[in-house]
Length: 250
Image (cartoon, rainbow, N blue to C red):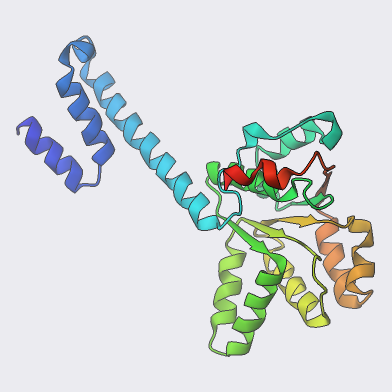
């Protein structure tokens, strides 16, 4: 079989990256002449694996619908004024909290950078191969309510998709007023995901005051019990207006 035929078959088998690496070897014989067959084959396999991994991460990030899809964990601003615990964040960025089905709560004023941070954590999760989904709280609740009212099974399909999402990011938590129906939807969602995934909540309010905002009912007490007991709390102080600083990362 000629090299051209080999390359054609590799592409038919969807090994395009390996085929590209093989073409590079053929075009640069002096560079690879000293390598044995196993070493040259390993180069092809490694290149194919790296390209596939990169594409998978890109698909996961694109499918997450994150607000800042270019948020980079390595670019987190640890300036003293923000009050971030570098060691705590470094531990969490290894995504071990997802393996343990634990949650993260980002607390801070508007424009403190909570959304960007949550997306940086989302990107880290995508890099680790986890499926991530980002929602504004109001949009998530509306989608749940609409699908439930449809009475065509779409609610259970949506809940099943969210249950299989390893990291769910809920931004603007409690930014808008919530009703008892809203809290019922959130509690059912949290219950469904209790042992299957992690949730990141971004809120302008400290979690100690959430029950007062939501209303002290059995549903809100149950919701807080499930969320707070397994959450890492990260307080974020404002450092100028980070909405402007991060706008270029959209």
